[in-house]
Length: 163
Image (cartoon, rainbow, N blue to C red):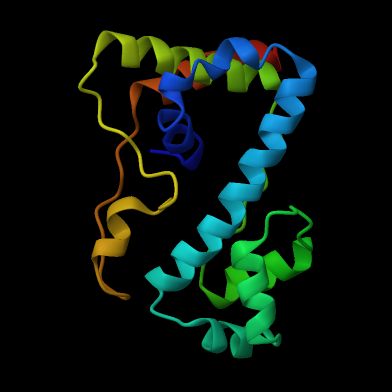
């Protein structure tokens, strides 16, 4: 499961897809999404690797207070090079995705439809972007998530977008 699909799953019952048609709402929604998502990912990955803030600060050449600020930041003003250093220190890949809003709306709509079909659908823990990985100790292997149906839908939308 991709990070995008996990996040989409957590918003399926909010009726966001229709509201995303409005540009002002969409801009604020995407900004807020980043402001919540990036700090949560940083903290989760640090914990997954069994590191505390001081250790990560030493690994990245910054102060513990700087790591703390990044993990609780709500202003969304992250330096890309700082994020790269943290990702490298924690043996991770930094991925920046710029996608057309039409693809985001299509993903939300597909998930809303799937959610409507199954009221018993599992909910994603969007504050824990690494899911079951955190249940294991650092260094233990974890099962690779399997692709879901919405990823197939996303491929259709990408194909139409790239045409």
